[in-house]
Image 1 (cartoon, rainbow, N blue to C red):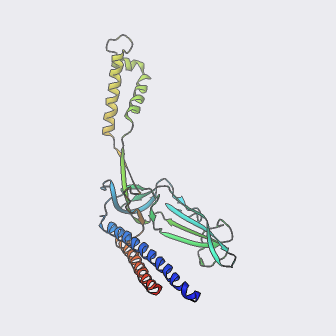
Image 2 (image 1 turned 90 degrees about the vertical axis):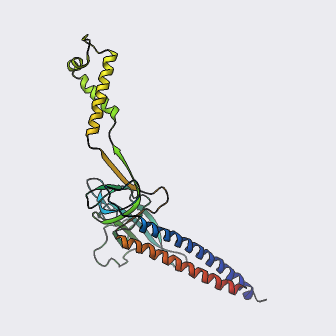
Image 3 (image 1 turned 180 degrees about the vertical axis):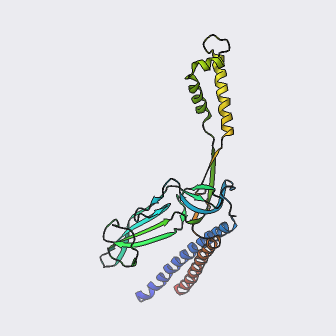
Length: 299
């Protein structure tokens, strides 16, 4: 038998296996995207002020968590989140060109989200799927850019280094799906009691006049306990009467739900998920057809 004829069935079999793997992977990704689309569509959008703890969908404008915006490392542009990649163009022994990534980083600092009611929460971007509000790609001759992206002719490849930077700008209107957690800061009552007793000790005359019931010039154990009880009562009353600060943070869900941050409308976000689901479904069908064709030629 000619070697070519004996090799062809084996080649078709390998193609069938590869196509089957492609079909299975694509259809699995289709189901994942389909579920994501339902989560995005079925999760109601809520106001930050009225949001309950758990998985939420909120929208608002991005703001720095601190007094000043973050500067993106490559361009220096003000932003609340950044991600960059630096790649070098290399050639293999056959002269083929490819880009080799040499540096890649993303910011992890929280930023604030402020909605139309001026309610505010923090966003912890770690492990979030973030759609940037701006992306810049430019080229240079050094491993670190000497300047930011050029304002014109950015498509020109002048150098063997490629810089890619993605940012969320200050004031970008975004939608966030993630897990909201909050806690109330009421202060440390024990520390407040100790501070109040220390303050009272600075004026011994007033302390004795208030708590030295037997007028012997010193506080007995019972009288000192009464002073402690009074200080604790006053601190508790002050805590109840003071405004309680409620800090809310949206971060990666613990139950595996998608953690999305995107400068998109609600409808556009749902369309994006449907588009990806459709692409994976089409790729899966292509894999099935290719697998059947290869099997038919391998026998």
